[in-house]
Image (cartoon, rainbow, N blue to C red):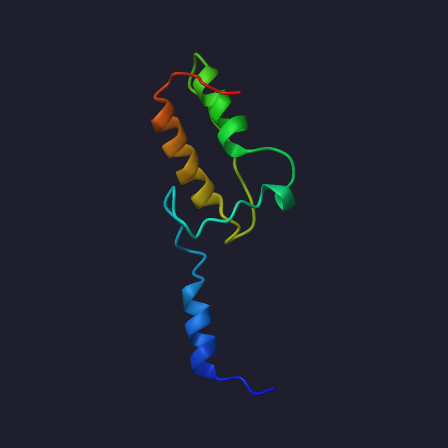
Length: 88
């Protein structure tokens, strides 16, 4: 198999893990099925909205796993709810 370095370079630069996707980006892929239990919008979002005190949350994972993208989604979700506390 012959590798064309131009194609490899192009592919490498298309998938830049250091650039999070903005909320609502059509390139977003929901990976909750393989990440395990929990949805950041429900689990962490609920804690933030329902708490009467400031909260501190830890959200961790491997580099390029989508932490910043998920946090941008959470930010938009919280902004959309505007503190109404409408969680399932």
